[in-house]
Amino acid sequence: MTDKALDGRKILVVEDEYFQAREMKALLERQGATVVGPVSRASEAEALLIEQPVDAAVLDINLGGGPNFATANLLQREGVPFAIVTGYDKSAIPAELSAVPRLDKPASEKALIAQLAQLV
Image (cartoon, rainbow, N blue to C red; front, side, top):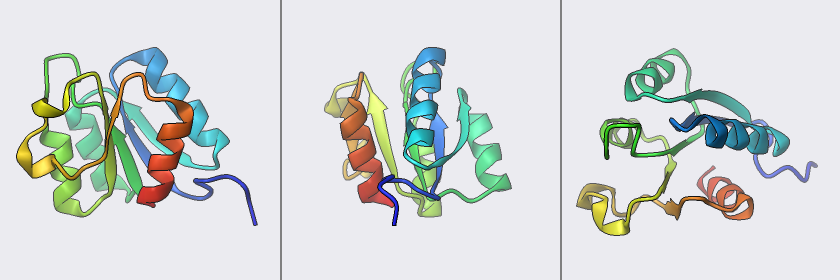
C-alpha cells in the first residue's frame, strides 16, 4: 500500500504558464503520478490524448488568448475526468461544463491533489 494519492495514474497537464506547469508536474510526480505533458496549447493536448490514454487531466482554460474550451470539450466527450484550474470566475464557464470541478488559481497543493484523487 502506498501513501501517494495518485500512484500509478497518468495525468495530463494543460497549463501555459511555465513555472506553474513545472510546479504542478513536480507535485503530481511526488504523489506518484506519471505526468503527460505539460502542454501549453489545445492542439498539443489533443495530440497527446490521441497518442496515449490518461486517467485524468488538469486544465487551465486560458492558454494565452482568453478562455478556450476546446480541450475541456474534448476531455468531456472522451470521458476523461478533469479539473479546471483558472483565474476566471465561475460565471466564465459554459453551462455544459458547470459540473466540472473548478479550482481558483493559484490552487493549493492540497486542494489540487484532493480533487484529482477524487476524480481517479
